[in-house]
Figure (tube, rainbow, N blue to C red):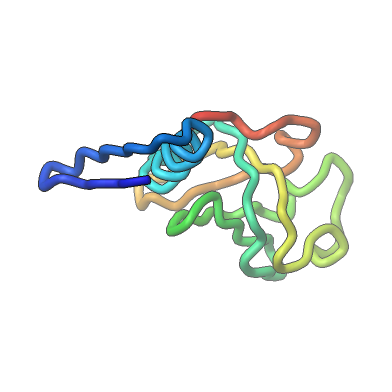
Length: 117
C-alpha cells in the first residue's frame, strides 16, 4: 500500500488489496473530517467532570456532554453513567461561536454512528 499527500493536501492511496485500500480511505476521512451538527459519533470519554464528560469524537476533536444530556432520567453524578475510557454514542447538537462542541448522549441512545462522515 502507498499513501501520498501532495502540496495541495490531496491524498492518493494505492493498493493491490481493495479491503486494505478501503480501510485507509476510511481512516483518512475520519482524520480530516469537520464536525457536523446532527451527526452521531462513537466517541471515547476522555475526562469526567462534575458537570459532564469530555468525549473525543475523533483525534484532535472533543466535545462536552453536559450532565443533563447523559440520560432521559435525572443523573446525580456523571460517574454513575460513564467512566474515562468508555466508548459512547453521542450526537453533536451545537458548535458555538468559539468552536466549542456540545454533545448529547440521550439523543444518540439506540443509534449507530453516521458512516462516511
